[in-house]
Image 1: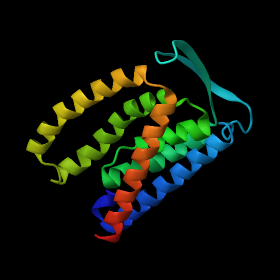
Image 2: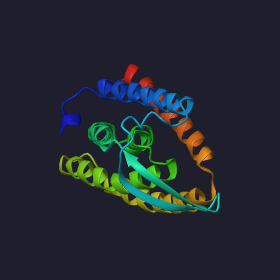
Image 3: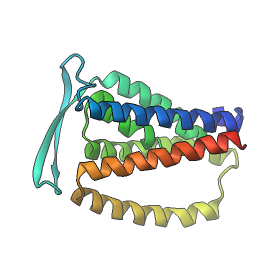
Image 4: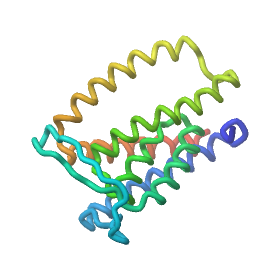
Length: 183
């Protein structure tokens, strides 16, 4: 509903700046060897997954869920405003604040984005902003692309996923700021 009433350049600039901040936090976390999230030492949730690239089970705990929940709320608003997937904020938040490994954060974000997309998409659809033919053309392409990505993610190291994600964040941030300054 906000995107229907706020100037596009404000939305683009806000998202672009938030992406540069996210990149800075991710780089800072890397310099501190991943311990930014372990402020109180308490883990709230425990999980594990099999990492095909290392042939090991990865066990991890989730720290500080509150900051991640706050960032996720802001992410939902921003992704609804611009239509960029909330994963560009949720994945770093889970990794930085809660200590969730990149692969698990990416997988969790992918699931949560379905809810964000449904909520935002419905509002835009009801206001006449969606085009049925474009949507129908995109769905199979997105489905195929996501199936390929999932198969690759299982085989690729977390470091490569991190590097690809950082390049993607940089590209999105630059694109959003460019649009914000030129719209």
